[in-house]
Structure formats: structure tokens, C-alpha cells
Length: 264
Image (cartoon, rainbow, N blue to C red; front, side, top):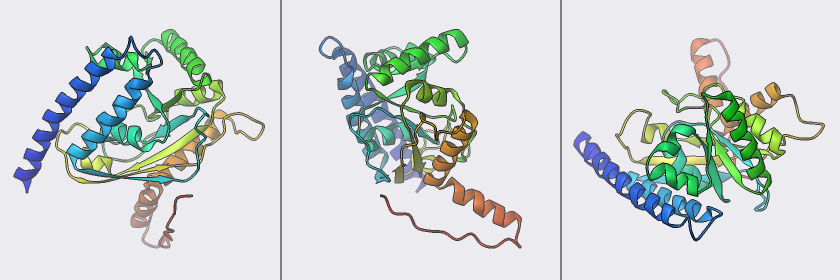
């Protein structure tokens, strides 16, 4: 079985490189014909579907609310694996751009494709440049572009949900758009951080109810961060894992009651 897994992983990596090169080249070539960058997003969806298929991933999507097609959103998801990016492109019912660190934009061809697609680059090492990038992102969101961000800032090493950075919350509040929590299950098993080994398996993406960032009922920034993080934890099953861990550490505590959830 290990030999089969290694062979499958090798084939997937080769296809990943080839499909990424072809997709990036097509994206760059689309620049003169589509200034909006929507063609790049459509190509990214096809690219993601092919990579999920070659990885042997069966994707399941659970929607807990109906999203307005003309309403921009800031999607916030837990980050376990590179697979998360492919899953989000395919799962979300509306076009979305990712917010990425500036270093990715310097990668030849791949970074150029992201720029043509009007993805948003943030310079985390330069506060002034980061502020300008966020202002540009706010303007782009107000004009109708939805974005996706991993508020943990990096992939989890062990699959557990890490603390959330506040930059994405400032972005959503400044743009005046709702935050949609997204929970991803199974991606860490399929391809954990730092590994090129790919295991076949299911990945579930749960898209939650939009959380407003403007209005009198909106909590302060810290409370908003906690609210969104708790919802991402629930949607990704992290709350059950934490509850199970607490029970194992305290045998006298009652066993948590697990309730099945159906998509709205």
C-alpha cells in the first residue's frame, strides 16, 4: 500500500506542476482580453477541479445559508493544507480572489497569473505598504469583488485551529461587508503541511451563515474575532475535537452530546 501511495503522490505532483504551468500561461495570455480578471478565476476553478480529481479527493459541500450573488463577502476559513485552496475555489458558489502574501506575486508566471486575476497581495513585513494594500483591497471589495483569507496566517502543522490575525477583520469592517465563516474537514489527512504525500479521501467544506461587520449590533473587534473563530471551529469540527480532548483529560466530566447538523 505504501508503494501505491508513493506512486500516486508522484503522479499527482507531476500533474500539479504541468497543470499549474498550463493554467498560469493561459491566465497570463488572457490579460489583453479580460481586464476584470474573471477569466483567471474561471481557470482557477478548472485547475482546482482537476487537482482534486488527480489527488483522489471526493469533495462534499454543505451550505448553511443562501449567499447573495451580487453581494461581496470576505470568506474566512481554517487552513490545514494546500488542498484548502483547491476546495474553496470549487466549493464557493461565487467568484472569489485570495489575499496572499507579496512573496507569491514574485514567482514567475504563477505570480503574474495571480496579478492578472486581480488577486490581492499584502506585504506583511512593511506596515505602510500593508496598509496601502488593505485600502486597495477595500476599494476592490466595495466594487463587488469577494475575497478569501486564511486568518490563521499559515497552514496548521497538526490540523488544530490556531489563533486568528486581525488584518482580515479590519479589511471586512472597513469595506463594510459580511464575513462568511468556512470550515474545512479532511484536508490535513489528504496532504499535511510540509509533505508531498497525497492520500485519497473525502474533504468536506461547510459554508456558514454570513456575520455582519457593520451596524449597532456588531460587537467590538476582539469579540468579532472570537465569534468568527468559534464558528469556523464549529464548522470544521474543531469544537468537537477540543471537547473530546477536555473529556479525556478529565474522566469525571460528562461525555459531550454530539448533535448532527444538516445544511440550511
